[in-house]
Image (cartoon, rainbow, N blue to C red):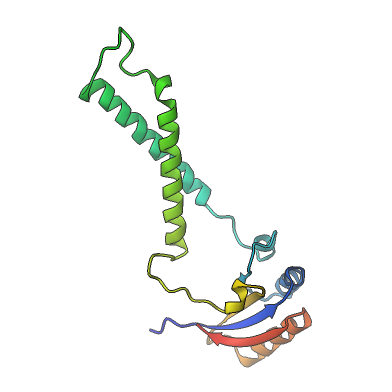
Length: 176
């Protein structure tokens, strides 16, 4: 099975034109596969109809894991492994360990969310990214439409004409 896919690519030179095009193209009933921009475009994810990410929920669970590990480690050390009598003070004075627990929570959440993000985006060390158009990393914007066997030349012509009508400076097909 081939790992390559064929796309119809529309290139834009302004983010406002891109946003207007996305709204009109989705309004016409066409499914946009992805959008590539050189900088974040506010509201683009909503215009594309993308669902909200659940990465923040993963961050909550990673942070809770960090809190649990920190408190468990502190309790084990102070109560069982190396109990020390500090003038009658309790072996497990929770308030004294709030900074350590907080830092461990932040560390686990940050590392866990970073690893999760890279895994979900399939960005691991040594992987060569599939770039639709090199110019989208510098100054241009791109909308892509995945082409498969079910999409005939009539579909390609209709989407190409719509892209040009919406202000695309270039429309072409690319296999990635």
